[in-house]
Amino acid sequence: MNLKYKSYWRKSGLKGKWGNIFLNHLNDYKPKKFLEIGVFCGVTARNTCDFLNYHHKKNFKYIGIDLFGGKKNSNTEEIEPDFLKNQRFANPLKNFYYNIILKENLNTIKSVEKLLERYKENTKLIKGDTNNELKKINLSNVDYTFIDGGHSYNTVTNDLKILYEAMKGKNKVLLCDDYGKESYIPEVKSAIDDFAKKNNLSINLIENRFAEIIT
Image (cartoon, rainbow, N blue to C red; front, side, top):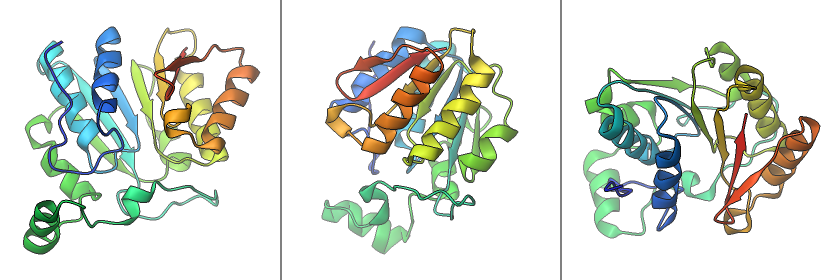
């Protein structure tokens, strides 16, 4: 695969080698309909669309769900990644460009839509809490879901439950971040382990970070 994960001068949860590991995993399945829970600043979204367009031209669909700077609608106590709380970049050029010149908050739906502009006919961004929004989406044809949104036990469990009900028996991919020691969040691991045990599902640990579940 020739494509490499690009930062697009934005913050991303998949820093360093992790973006390429993600793309390599995506390459194993080459989905046509992709769902991302937790879009953040849109870097993984853009890389995913670049990948899907490379393999399928314009014959693909990307759906992304995120709070996009809004508030959660559920009563679930949520765990937010630290890098989303601070819009200041360590790189002074990036900080000057986005915060001084553009005055742009990268974790807004408007900003991510601009990053995905070339794929606007293939993408759909949804602003909201997955505890409410996920059940409104037709998930029957989704091939691959990357789960990196709400990190509380209840939210991860809810996301997995809704996704699995729509995808079970269809050999689809659920890839969950923050499971292994490389980016470990205890509530995430516990929720995935309990859900897999309850539904008699196998978990494949990838690079000691991601949990892969095949429905």
